[in-house]
Image (cartoon, rainbow, N blue to C red; front, side, top):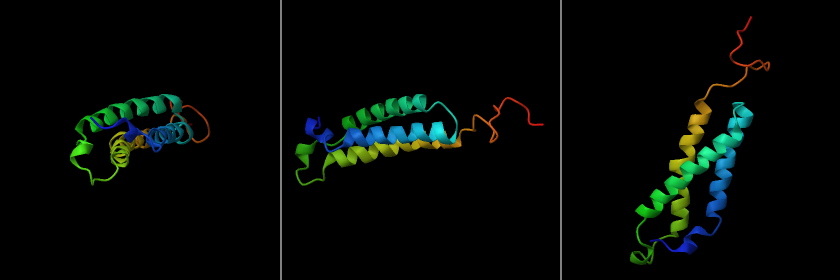
Length: 107
């Protein structure tokens, strides 16, 4: 099991910031509920982080290896945040440019 000190150096902060960015994109760009997309991104990141920690090689077997917290952070952002950002980016806008809901016909 990886050492607890592996999760320092701003790893969790960077994951939080990445999730906030996904929520901001959903709120500002797509007019969706940003808090829901933030929470969903945090859940996905948590499960990807658990998967990466379980699959990570044992640090004592590789004493000359790089800092595993950087590797875990990049893997979690790549496998957890980018797919969520892609999903949000491909969603249709909730409102038209003039502020009408999408359900209203355009005359």
